[in-house]
Image (cartoon, rainbow, N blue to C red; front, top):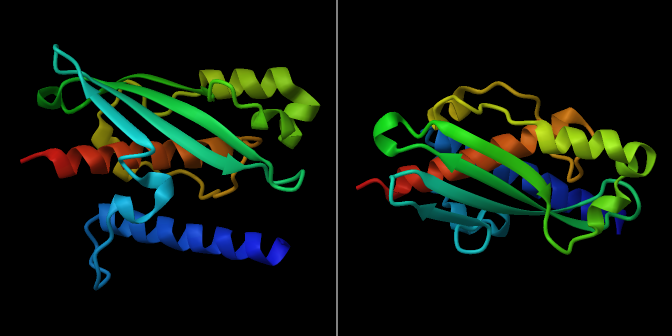
Length: 175
C-alpha cells in the first residue's frame, strides 16, 4: 500500500509540474489539458458562475487524503469571488473549509493535536486577496504537495493550485 501511495504522489507531482509549465507557456513538446487529470477536471472540480455585474463566483472542490492515519480521504471547498474581466479579475473574496458532510479533516494530525488553531488558520488564510488573478502565475510559494492541511506550506500550495486552475479555465474561455 505504501508503494502504491508513493507512486500516486510522484505522478501527481509530475502532473502538477507539467501543468505549471503549460500555464506559463513553456513548451514541453506535448499538450496538457486541465481535463487530463481528475483533480483539476473543470467538469467535476471547478464551477464558474458569471454574475449579472460581471463578477465571477468560483467553487473548487478538492479531494485529498491525510498524510498520516492511513491516508484517510478528505474534501475541502474553495470559494473565490473575482471582479470583472475588464478590471483584471481582482480576487475579491476567498474562503476554504471542509466540504459539507465531510469528516475526513478530523483525521489530520494537526487537527487531532490543535484543532482550533488549524481550523482558524484555514478559515482566515486568503493569499492574493485584493490582487489581480494574473498575480498567481508570479506568486512564489513553497512546493508542498502533501494532501493534508496541517502546515501553512500545504495550504499555500493548494491555494496556488486552485487559483492557477481558475486562471487557466478563464484564459481558455476568452475568445
